[in-house]
Amino acid sequence: MKRLLLFCFISLWQLNSAQAKRIEVNAQQELQAVLDMAASGDIISLGKGRYMGNFIIKQALTLDGNHHATIDAGGKGHGLLLQGSNITVENLSITNWGDDLTAQNSGIYSDKKASSLIIRNNNLQGDGFGIWLQKGKEIKVTGNAVIGNPKLRSADRGNGIQLSIVQNVEVTNNEISFTRDGLYIISSQHNLLSNNTMHDLRYGIHYMYSHSNQVKNNLAYNTRAGYALMSSKMLTVTDNVTRDSEDYGFLLNFITASTISHNRISNVWTKPEHKVIGREGKGLFVYNSAYNTISHNVIDTAEIGIHLTAGSENTKVYANSFINNPLQVKYVSNAEQEWSLDGTGNFWSNYLGWDLNNDGRGDDAFEPNDGIDKLVWQYPEAKVLLDSPAVLILRWIQTQFPVLKPAGVKDSFPLMESPVLVSNKSSNPLEPSKITIAADTLVVAQGNTMKEVK
Image (tube, rainbow, N blue to C red; front, side, top):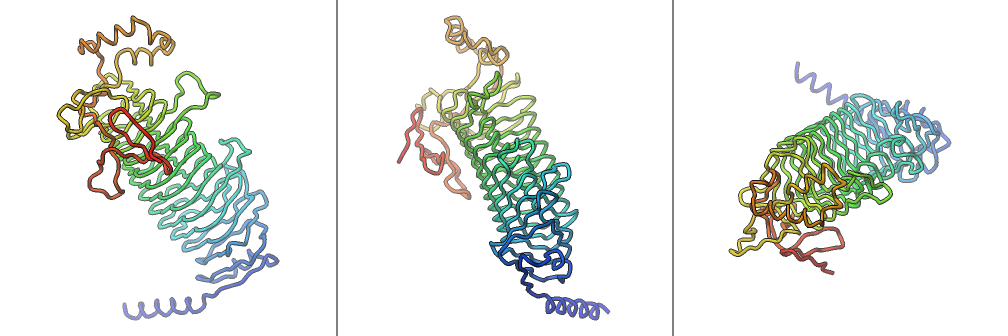
């Protein structure tokens, strides 16, 4: 009986495969009628031109735009609605879909539980969401370009690529700009985001209520926050770059059991016209997050290198490089934190200690904050007194009588030279004297001096 069922299944599969065909379509034909009549496995090949309408794909087929066909949704609804699994959409341009965010208007929208989708090498430009995927599994989104409408307020735009309640999705090699957020992931597990470029957005990558995801080798620039990680756990965030952010390089809000490592953060600075008290660019902002590992990151030229608050404790912080940040650490808590692991601390560009035994670690611990700092954080108006004789005396007294100094961050093994990741798979993550800050700049850091190498 089993052999008979297997024989019938193979026969049906061979029959369907034999019947699958390539269907050539031109812009004068009714594309929806062709899609409705197509059989499972067919390839719908679009000729050059503009296809007006909102189209639905129900069968397991391939829609190929051949890099010169455009779907114009006429300013309403979805450009493409995918209501089945095993669908491929490739080499297609989609534009002018709806702007109703409540209705989730999207260039490409997958219906509930549409799985085994391939969305690749498409160009999308419109007001609403670019690509919206929900309740699906085993999906690949690769090589797409999504452009929002910069004339709209950020809050009125959709996200570039949105993953909602999905699993085992790979989002790779996409470029997203002028949407609200680049990649938005909510209530999703076991997904990979890699090698994507995101710019001119609110957040490059935005996580909510997700776990067991990987974020690797992405680039974000010209954002309010490069990576906003919220209410999630077991995230692996490695080898990413963020530069030219206004508020945060990385924002961690209620993140637990996650690894933030080998990332590069540079130039996080609030624009002068947006300055208010308490709004400074933060390389790493860690809020209500604990039991994480933050290591081997480069934080260069942020108004505040790292800001921890609201119970952000029990976090391993080591082998990071804090360079050219006017305020290296802002730690708002009274619990003492040791920022080193197994004798390896962090590199601080403003560390003034010595290394007399030449072991690569400073002889004196580095404590970035004192009681005066905390006083100024509570009462910002007191900044005008920082250079007064009274404040200078108070700082000196704290160094002579440590018992008067409030508990805070302490790095017992500050590094004299900056760590660097030799390669993504290096077993020895520390190599002195070199840091790659940006693609066109190599910075040599030794002790308290830095210089650019052409």
